[in-house]
Image 1: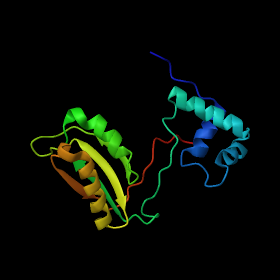
Image 2: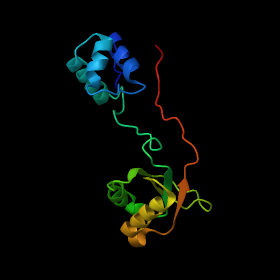
Image 3: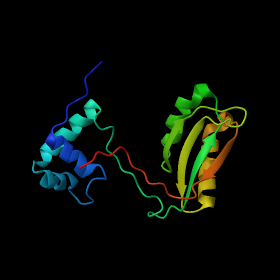
Image 4: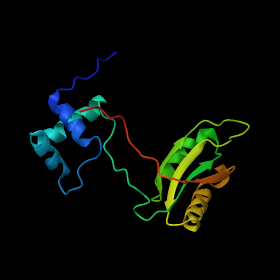
Length: 163
């Protein structure tokens, strides 16, 4: 078993400076570097190391779909053959209106769905048109589906460390 990677004071400062998001400016790593007191190159090198060692899992964009005008956000749930989930997930996940998709266990007899895909539209008719596209892509593999619309925004945050 590998020991936990050690973090030093600079790593901790970088984590604290970025855990609520990178600064919204043209050169966010430069802003973090100024805050921490190191070069932007060092910030980027340390963050790459933290990714490789698993200290942080990912660096990515978490859009607020509502603020972008996407008022209809639906988790589509699908009953597809288990052996086809990986193949279908690659194809559905490549659609530009799908933000993420994944495999989940069924809970029979009440919940037959094993494949989930989040779609975003300006209104429900747009989402329904997107779902028809997914259904067409899935073809005979679509053995039933539903759209579960979001009713409120949940705060999306990961693990935080204290200052």
